[in-house]
Length: 279
Image 1 (cartoon, rainbow, N blue to C red):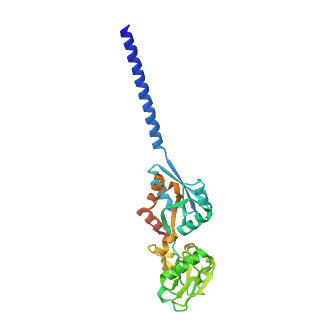
Image 2: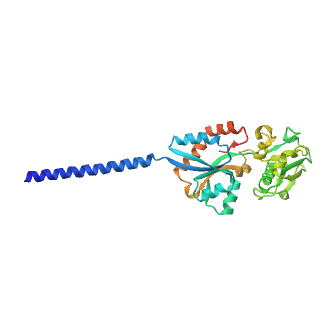
Image 3: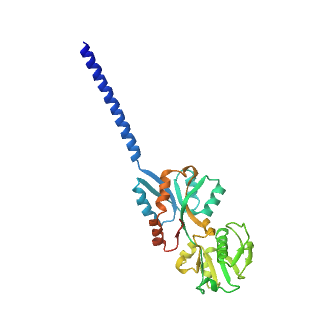
């Protein structure tokens, strides 16, 4: 009887060990499945040209991250969708636009890092060198607050004018305190500026207008924004995320995959100078 009882106890012990071993195996498999699960990043973008993102999508796929591009046709919805949790990040806007939009709409968003600069430039039909502009020359600039202010800052960078201190990123012609070249500044709708080139000495055009009019910012401008200048940093484009996600490891991999030498080369090859790396 004693032998039978010991055998029974040993058998029960084996069953218990096997059961515990089975539970441990089940848990390990479950954890493995979780770690192997593909991470998804929904990234809001604008426009139809997404060639630059192809390489980044492939790079992240190697880290088991599925980068999905969600396209928008306006500049309002991408930030709203990000704040509402429909997106994990977006990449379409300048720092200047981002700061104003999130302040106006009270959104808790933050920049994850810089991407590109779509440079504003000075163009001319008659001049090849910006320094040959005559005294009293006529200049056309955009008449909207954002692009007009940016144009005046660019003219200040050249040394043609001086603006009041503390005017920020939206100065107006009324903020000019020194006009070193006695320039005659004409304000007009940004889209009308290319047609005015025959009537003025120089024009200041934002990137999109110049490219749409058939100009290559790097080749055709006689002066262009420099990514190294402090005055230009507000016009860098960014990847934005919710503030609570700024330390998210998966999203950190997104900016790391973007800010590489390979991406710099792709920007140069794809945009031919209409956009410049800002990192």
